[in-house]
Length: 122
Image (cartoon, rainbow, N blue to C red; front, side, top):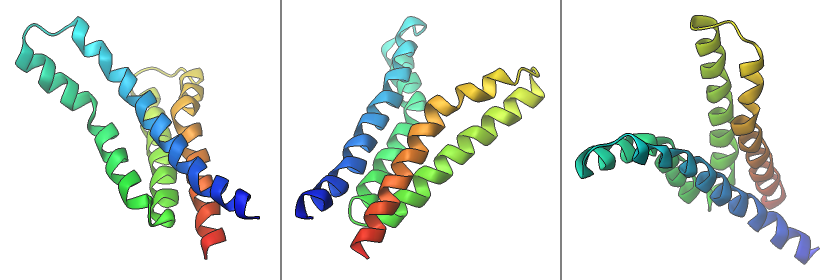
């Protein structure tokens, strides 16, 4: 029983770190189009705002698992809502909404793991 609780404690935190690094990887495309150091630094900062927000949420969720569960679930829902809105306003290609599961799916899974951890701790 002790081993399961230790596993359940660490797995959402490790997955959160991996997910945040996965999202940060998408910001590396700014180096193709920037001309100077200041422009690159500003573009990199702008692309990493969601990563910074998730990192702050992870720091809070490290002790308060319910915050992690709610935040990651809301993040996934907001991403799907944004994709639906963009699809409806720009072009009506429904298969693009399924692409959002690449981002929202892991967020929902991490939220579920944080919820399980909170439930077990409670």
